[in-house]
Length: 298
Image (cartoon, rainbow, N blue to C red; front, side, top):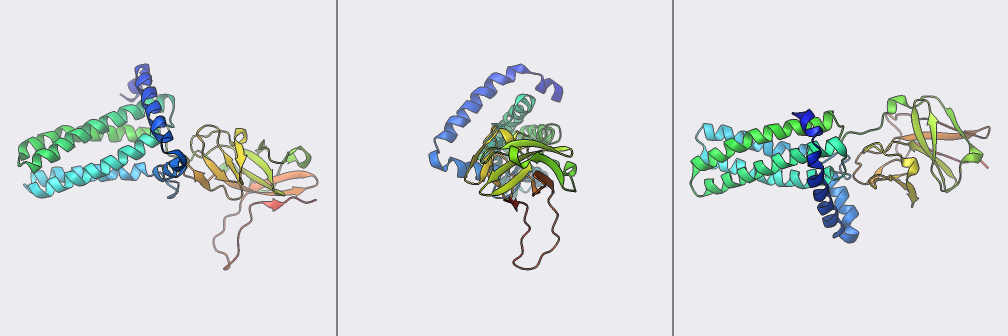
């Protein structure tokens, strides 16, 4: 089933139209667009919001099924209602994440969302019928919707495990543990990102305000090249989807990326810029900080 969905090019046209509609709606937010993106993606949390919101409808509707089987009709309707609220929140965040996907992942996500929408409609009708004391109709609608949620959940898992949507794309295991030469200091232009190789990982070097900063070049969102991005107010922006990261810490400032870009420690020695993995701090005295960048020596 998954292979069939990934290879079905007929899904591209409706997917493109939906993406255009979402982009238009997002642009209507004007100056609040950045904050809305961060909220829906989960920048404030450091973790995607959508995955854990999906637990609400799945758990609630499973409980509703159990309550129906035990004859607790009022409690079952309450559980259906809680699931509806969670499903709506999951739909909004899921759509926002989906519009930044591509190719096969976008096709799977479109089917995933369509199944969720159908299930949401069935459970909405179930909740309405239960409120009118038509419990049998409500139960039948729920029984039709529940398999859709299960299949949709399977596709959602495929998006995470097969396509790595919502997964940090960086790999700190490949960063050098010892200082490694990456670039002659004279070759690094002020205010311009420069790509270099450090051990088994690509890094982006930036000289700003007398300091040399180093981040992994791959954007944590989908691996976009930060070295091809642009600099603004002490941050670097991914050219693919607009995620922004602080140069001095790698912290995500704007989604869709929610994870920080790994920050490497730098130094200049004998005219060469050297980088290494930033040491992990287990504990530190009050008021102390770990410095990931060093000032450029005159």
